[in-house]
Length: 528
Image (cartoon, rainbow, N blue to C red; front, side, top):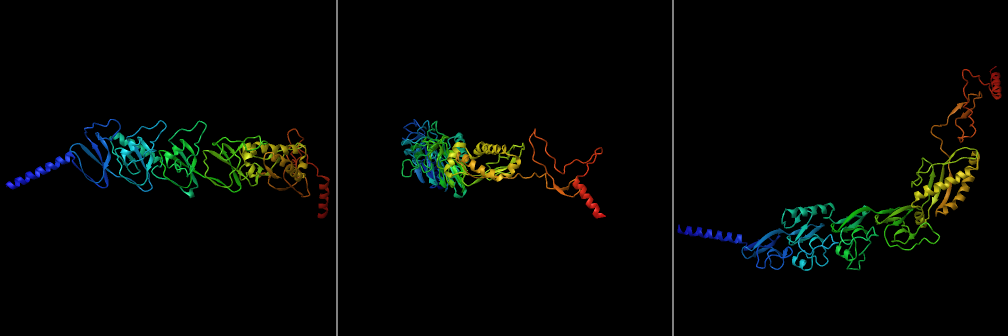
């Protein structure tokens, strides 16, 4: 009995000692797939005077983390917080937020990592001037033993961090939602089959100058290791190269890009495709102001060299181009022959003539016919920039210049000829018009190939019909129709042979013509 009492007392003492050891946190075990953050509850060095992390033995969260195994401490002085290792899956991106460090500069949106990006070493990060807040550097795929009291890591599937209060959780959840909206946990992937490019907008760095609407290209020389940012994947080198915030002139082409979406966002747009038989005239909104290359004789504006602000003197030939549509626009100009039709119900392939209609004429004998017309035009690809600089685009050229010029020419021709002369001399007028207007077209940097005078289509209501003449007994057939319309104030038009009025109840029937009477006599003689 005495032995059982001693055994029970010994067990009680052991349990008491285990409880004291547990409560005093003398011994701590950390799993090999986790880390432990040490919080010092009291210290002879006092509390942290500035900052958040204790670097010199003060009370507070310590800079070093504990890895797997047993660890021993002075009793009742430390509290250990077990945290998982930070894991970023393959092909994904992790974002880092630092709780402690130097404050951000006035032009900064994200913390600079130019001097340090040692997220696994808090002491080195703070000693080398690391800044607090969201970081420009990102974490690629892998597993990291990071002090999550100092660094909160936002991944797609989990937020790694020691949450100090409820406000912390809400803050980092908001950041997670923002990154998710921008597709920031995945790389930017541009496939060749998509025929797209990426337009980049940078949200950090110095602002653009007042005379720029888009940031110029910087850091694109691969040989310069200090400034080559590799398509915005290295924000620090982009800033070092003189990069500015805002929409960028440089675009992303086919490939995969691991870009910090808090630093830069990407908008996908289609490539510019110039088909065979066309050229593209570039109107650039950005670039240096260079000299005029159009020559002294050209007085309708300036043409500039490629890469300058204005209308480029060299057009883009057929092909696909990674052209930034925010930095300028490309006007497509046909270089094959195209037909302009002055016909209301007919539109050409390019739709330059969709607002054209037949030319209204007034002849010398006061008829008002309408003239359908076709003109074959060619634009030399080397002169396409001259045409665009002078008229803005091809449709404006057609509607504001060619239409009035061509209409006026044929109106002048018609007022000197009768309607019959217009019909009889159609071929000569067509040939003469081509010869005389070719010079006028040349003055607008155009080549007139041919002028074609058409024939107005018969309206659907005036169908071709045959009927007997009511005043003729010979049985001859006439075609229904009418003569061209005269202008107001002209003599009344002649009626058609078959449009004579029928005798009324009080009117006297008209006697047959002599030819009709002779025909009737012959008919009666045969009957006898």
